[in-house]
Length: 151
Image 1 (cartoon, rainbow, N blue to C red):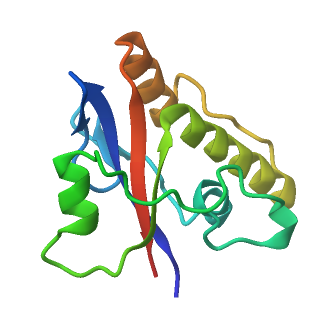
Image 2 (cartoon, rainbow, N blue to C red):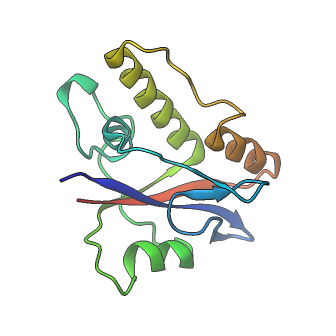
């Protein structure tokens, strides 16, 4: 049985966190298609974000143990991850700044590439997370990703 990550991207407007994307994994593209933010069960990423599905060879988790669900989370995050009418059995709720999330993602991808003996490709401005980072940093707003896992 696999684990999946469920996340909401938030930005701060007037001292309040607001959910930016619909719950799930997608952000719309200009041509109305959508790209997955996380397109696989990247257990190495889960390890670096919240010590979930860890393996000893990955070393210490970048962010350590889950930080818990933020008390000032957006309504979207609260509804999707905590108060949904469906009980998805989410666990290990946490959050990361966009910068922390990107560092964890790049670290996980680098470790996977080494294990698979493939070329490592970091997130850049042409990837969906890199594009998001660029756009949100341009507007100079604090951005974080609130997430939890299922089994």
